[in-house]
Image 1 (cartoon, one colour):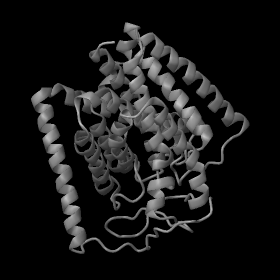
Image 2 (tube, rainbow, N blue to C red):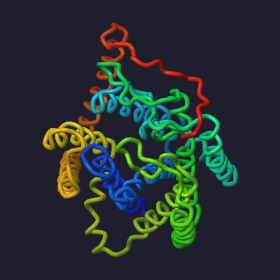
Image 3 (cartoon, rainbow, N blue to C red):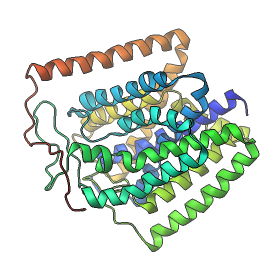
Image 4 (tube, rainbow, N blue to C red):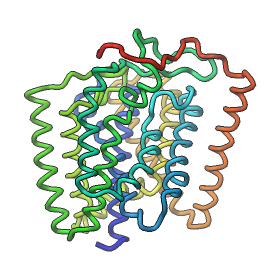
Length: 382
């Protein structure tokens, strides 16, 4: 497979992950009724795909860059965008509850280090993280809703009894804590190393066999041993908390999705799915744009949060998906020089907002948090 063909396949995988991500993000904000299980399942595929893909891309590009590039140019930048989104979209204090961009930003330099390890060392690290996850959940506690505070008022987003602390959120019970999500990035690294090392047919076959086995086992476990999970307010992904059933199913389905797009040889089907490739070419921009559109425009049109029935939700999702494709297409039409200017403007805007937030906080413009943030944990599992 040429580098061009590989990149096209990766763009389609990333675009598929974006489309599934929008399913749950829109559900959590606009739907007035319990989300159908099928939508919860589809939306729960986005996070493992994104995180595995981030590790995969570090692996396939590791020979062209050093650790500093992945630490600052990629990792620190993605964390900065996550802080920007917390400030501008959600209007909450950043770095509090381990959003997905924080996890990916942290995982990227770790993934580079993982590229230097032996196969069995990577597998051992990933397994250790997965094994430690339920142990830490039980020992440190798993909150119903991680601590978040509105920026301008200092009030909590949601009051929770026996709230855990920030370190707990980053380690085990935030939205995307290090345990277990960092292990998905290491799996992505192993996927990339295997992709570079073996022949395409052997790689595709391994994806099918391992992915199918994990999917069947994980899917069966949901039928015969349904895990103890819950929805966090209206956020109804299947990984609160991430159980062994979910982890197994998510890894299996992610491998099969990789196999489908990496091995896509049908030209007609490839052309039909090309809009996903367009979405996948501008992932960070689309991530911000879709959250901004949901939070400001769609909620304005629906006259508030949680106002839509399922029919209006499906219409809104279709329009949102089309709008994001148009934005991505316009970005691609800019050409190399135009994209470079968009990148410079975006980075300047993010840095200015973060600097302004720091100055405002130091000047006392933002009020102190109304609820103390505890660092020491040890609360019982919910």
